[in-house]
Amino acid sequence: MSGLGKGIITSSIAKILQTRGYRAFPLKFDGYLNVDCGTMNPFRHGEVFVLDDGTEVDMDFGTYERFLNTSLPGSASITGGKLFSAIIEKERRGDYLGRDVQFVPHLTDEIKDRVKKYAADTKADVVLVEAGGTVGDLENGYFLEAMRQLASEEKVVFVQLTYVPSISPGEQKTKPTQHANRLLLSMGIKPEIIITREQEELNEDAKEKIAMFCNVDADAVFDDPLVDTVYELPLVLEKQSLYAVVARKLGLDEKKEADWGEWKKRVERIKEPKHALKVALIGKYTKVRDAYVSVSEALIHSGAEVNANVECDLLDAEKIEKGDAKEMLKDYDAIIVPGGFGKRGVEGKIAAIKYARESKVPYLGLCLGVQMMVVEYARNVAKLEGANSTEFDEKSPHPVIDILPEQKQIVRKGATMRLGAYEMILKKGTVGYDAYGEERIFERHRHRYEVNPEYVSKLVEAGLVISGTHPKNEITEMAEWKESFGIATQAHPELKSRLEKPAPLFVALLKAALKNKKPAG
Image 1 (tube, rainbow, N blue to C red):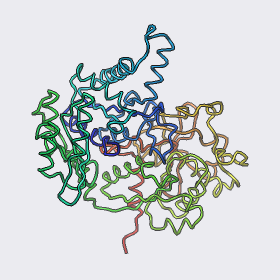
Image 2 (cartoon, helix red, strand yellow):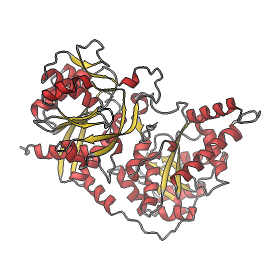
Image 3 (cartoon, rainbow, N blue to C red):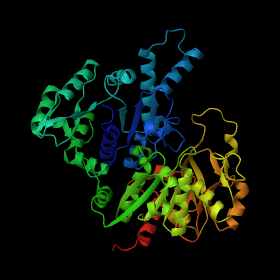
Image 4 (tube, rainbow, N blue to C red):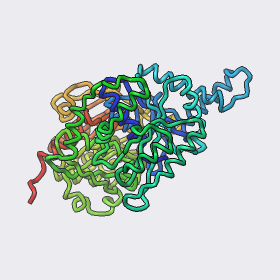
């Protein structure tokens, strides 16, 4: 069923395999007919995640990368839009030699070929395929059929993630699981492992019923309980001996030992931190927390790094625009302005940045967050009255933020922004350089606008520090304040933050917040 947490389960199983030295790579199918997630509204679909190669993908890919501490290729994402586009293009070229093009075998063969190629390209020992949506949906039926066929060609184990509701405390109902299982069986798919979500811990009676009525081994039913942090789930499944069952089913070495040392240490820091911090995230999609999930997770990772619990509050930029920024932000140890599109709420973001600069509250800006930092500095420090971005005011007398030259002729919206990993050269002696500890870095991007190069010298003369630039065309990639901790980047460093390797700028922000934090009372 959609929304049960298939991405977290997929990541957890992959992590369990990875800790034993296996090359485990996730792949996801999404049934929607969009080619990618790039044109989707965060209110409807949550965050758009961007890979190194610039592919815009489902937010589950963030979970995969955060768990596995690795970067995935765009081929890990298969969508209905990609499949049908490819099939139609092949038909137009005459690749099918006059055949009538059908779901079986042409579409299912296309799917199997992509899965096999992905396995070969990544040199994977195990590929974990997540099928998005709900069993019985029209939009994923053809993909499940392809997986049924694949099971006769490769070693495939089907895992069913299911929900077990409780009518009353202690009375768990397994009928929904049984019916879902029968639906899968009717499609020729037999789950060999069943993992359950529920409101209370799965009891032995329910577990026995599921094993018996769904025809799975008694030791192949696992509990996916509520945990303090999602990063604890692989450890919970490890205790239930999930690896032994997976290894037995896939023919892997059941005696291989896992190395959980660093992972377990960081999970314990998340659960029992020494310090506490409050961070304000000034956003415009605040009704949907998933719109900023990578930022939230980066704060968890960096919190584990500095041994602090980070309470992150999503504050509506429009409310700050209409209210008193100082009053609304006075209790926070740090402020973050993340990315976003459109004019709504930008003056609230600028007001929050002004408060952070004047009050010396540690500040981190991401993508739009660097653009608004520059606008605020231009207006209030460089005294460039009316300074703005041409995205919000085409007639601004001081367009300190302007559209990238290569974006001016673009009409199509999908996959046309500056996307993916780009090189950045950091200036020695800056906060940015100190955070990364190296001069040449690569961070992911997703934007159409940049700091206008015609205004860089004026901003620098006024005191703004340009600490990071692109090596070829001197695009401003990172800027800082001199007087206090305030740093912002055109990139999205949150997209490469992992539990075992937190984003350096987030770690630097929290260190500054701890140093700046006033004693309680």
